[in-house]
Amino acid sequence: MARYFRLLLVRLRVSVQLGSQYRSDFLVGGVMALFWLSWNLVPMWVVWQKRPMIAGWSFPEALLVAAWFTLMRGVLEGAVQPSLVAVVEHIRQGTLDFVLLKPADAQFLVSTAKFESWRAADAIGALVIGGYALHRVAHPPAASAIAVALLLTLAGAAVLYAVAIVVVAAAFWVVRLDNLIYLFNSIFDAARWPLTVFRGFWRILFTFIIPLGLITTYPAMALLNKLDWPTALRALGGAMLFVALARVAWTRALKHYTSASS
Amino acid sequence: MSRTLKAFPTLLRIGLAEAIAYRAEFFIWMLTMTMPLIMLALMSTLAEEAPIGNFDSPRFVSYYLATLIVRQLASSWMVWEMMREIREGTLSMRLLRPIHPLSGYAAESLASIPMRALFSTPIALIALYATSGRDVTRDPALIFAFVLSVAGAWLLNFCISSIIGTLALYLDSSIAIWELWLGGFMIFSGYLLPLSLFPPWFQTLAHVLPFSYLQALPVEIITGLHGRSGAFWELGHQWLYALSALGAMLLFWQRAIKRFSAFGG
Image 1 (tube, rainbow over the protein chains, first blue to last red):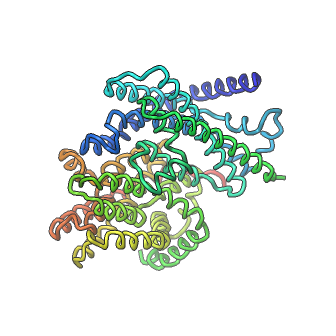
Image 2: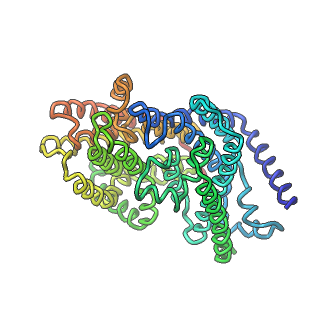
Image 3: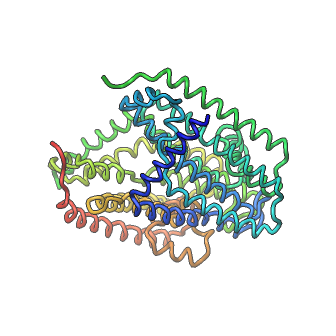
C-alpha cells in the first residue's frame, strides 16, 4: 500500500513537471477554464431568472450543485480521462505489453499515467462558486454536514473513475473509443443541474445507471442538510459496488487482451 | 467548375459509403448531440407548472426536437479532419486531385446528411405525435423558408468551419478557437435555451452575431415563431452572412494554402 502511495506521488510530480514545461499552455488553460466556468452558468442563471424556486431548489442552492459539477469535471478531465485516453492508444498499438510487464498493478499504472495539472483551476473555481453560494444560502453548514459532503465527494470521484474504467474496458473489444468518451462527456454535462429537476426516464438514468446524482447533487444536498441518512448510506454502498464492478470489468477485459504487434 | 460538378455525384456516393461503413461510430457520434433532449426533459418539466416566457410544455417539446433535427442536418464537423490533415500533411493527397479541396470536404459533409436524416425522421415523427403538430407551421411559404434556412445554416456552418480549419495553417492551437466558437454557439444560437427567454439586450446581441442563423432561425421558422415577412427578412440576413462567409473562405484559403508544406512521401 505504502509503495503504491509513493508511486502515486512520483507520478503526480512527473505530471506537474511535464505541465510546467509548457508554461504558456498552463496559463492559457487555467484562464480558459475560468472563462468556461462562468460561461456555463449562463443557462442556469437565465432559467432561475424566470422562476425563484425550481423543483425545490433556489438559485444559490443550485449554484452549489454547479460548484460540485465544476470540481468533478476537473477531476474527470484532469485526472481520469488523460490517462485513460492513453490506454486506448496502448491497446491500439500493442504497447500495453510494456505496462503489463512492470511490477505493479496494471490498472493502477494506467490510471495514474497522466494528470493535467492546470485543471486545478477548476477546483479553485468550484471553491469560489461554492463559497458564494453558501454565503447566499445564509445558514452555515454544520461540521457533520461538511463531513458527509466530503465523504460523498470522494464516493462521487470513485464512481466517475469506475465508469471511466468500464468505458476503457470496452476499448479492448471496440478499439475506436474517442467517440465513447465524447458521449460520456456530453451526458456528464447534465450533472450541472440538480437531479430533482429531471423526471421519469432521465431521473432513473441519472440516479442508477449513470449516477450523476451521486456525483454532484447528493454532496450539495448533504451540505444543505437536505439528505437523509439512508440515502447517504445507499449512495456510499452504490459507489463501492460501482468500483467493484469496474475492477471485474477491467480484469475480464485484460484477459481478452492480445498484443497487437509482432 | 464543370469538372467539380461532374465529380460531385461520385464524391457524394463515396461519402455515403464511408458513413455506412463506419455506422456504429457514426451512430455514437450522433448520440453525443443529446443535449437538446436533456434540455427538453428539464424545460418541459419546469413549464408544467406554468409557462416560462412564451413557452408552455408542448412548445418546448416542438422547439427542442426541431433543434435536434436542425443540428443533425446543418452541422459540419469537418474542422477536426481538416486540422488533422493539415497537421499530418495528408492534405497533400487532396491537393493532388483535380478539384478544389474544399469541394471535397463539402461533398463529404453533404454525403452524411442521408444517414443523419434517417436518424432525424423518427424524432420528427415523435415530435409531431407528442404535440399533435400544434406548433408546426402549415404555411407552404414558411415551409419553403424553412428548407432555405436549413440550407443557409449548413452553408454558413461549413464556411465558418473551413475558415477555422484553415487557421491551422497559421496557428498551432486553432482547436482552441473552434472551441471558443462552439462556446459562443451554445449560448447565442438558441441551442440550449430559446433566445426569447434571455433578457432583451442579449437578444439584440444574438441577433447581430452569426450564431442564431446557424440554429435558431430554422427552428423558429418551423415552429411558427415567425410570420411570413419576418421569416423572409431574417432569411435574407442569413444568406447575406452565408455568402459573405463563402467569399471570405475562398479568399482566405487561397492565401493560406501557400503556407502548406507536407512531410514524407
